[in-house]
Amino acid sequence: MYKKIKPFIFFPVLALSACASKQDLLVVEDNLKKLKTDSETIKSQSAVSYSDVQQVRDEVSKLKGSMEEISHTNSQTFGRLGMEDSLLVHKVDELELRLQKLEQYIAPPAKPETLSSAVPTTPAPAPDAVLLNEGLEKLKKNNFAGARESFSLLMQSVPPSALASDAQFYVAESYFSEKWYEKAILEYQTVITKYTKSNKRPAAFYKQALSFELIGDSLNAKARFRDLVKAYPTSSQAALARKKLL
Image 1 (cartoon, one colour):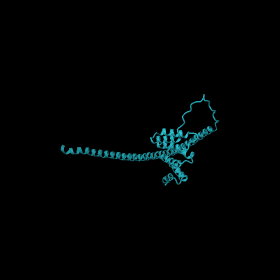
Image 2 (tube, helix red, strand yellow; image 1 turned 180 degrees about the horizontal axis):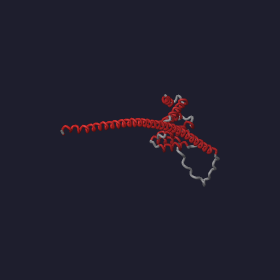
Image 3 (tube, helix red, strand yellow; image 1 turned 90 degrees about the vertical axis):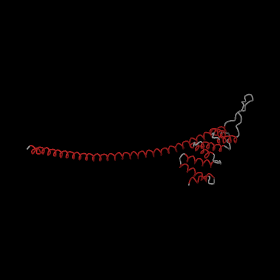
Image 4 (cartoon, helix red, strand yellow; image 1 turned 30 degrees about the horizontal axis):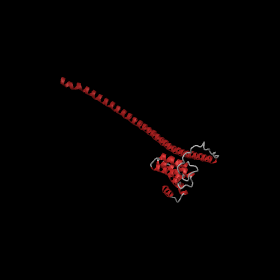
């Protein structure tokens, strides 16, 4: 009889276990639903946050591009203003030099000195052609400072030497050879404005335009090439300038 009753004893236990398992499954399902809901919410929030971050990045990129463009424009503008200012300063220096020479011409003649008070005179300066050749030899040896010294002595002679325009042109050439293009532009400008009848003037126009080109100022370079073609249409430099303007 004990054996017959035994199955009935375990039946309620099994029933309770089944009920417990179903309840656990329901709890697990609810937890899964909550997790899915939370996951979707997090994904939605993350998408919105990513969109906001991307928008901020785009705006920062645009601002950075605008600032770089403004900086580049300002750099070009200040560069041109600086060049124009340097040209004006150079012209003022030329005017002061001319005034000094005029003062020397109109100064009263010196009184003749007596033999007792006479002071030994300094040796006469070398002929202009010698100074020019000396400067050219130094220029060939890349002794730019020495070359400019010889050319400057030639240009300081009074009355002005017939070779002064050549000396001035080669001063500009020395700076061009040194790749100091901004200074070369100023020196070529002196040839153009001061020595209007010089045979070096067409070359000065062309080399000044090249200097502008080499510092990235294509606007002034093209303007100078056009000036050259207009002023000296039959020169060899004008033929080169026309190729640059194509």
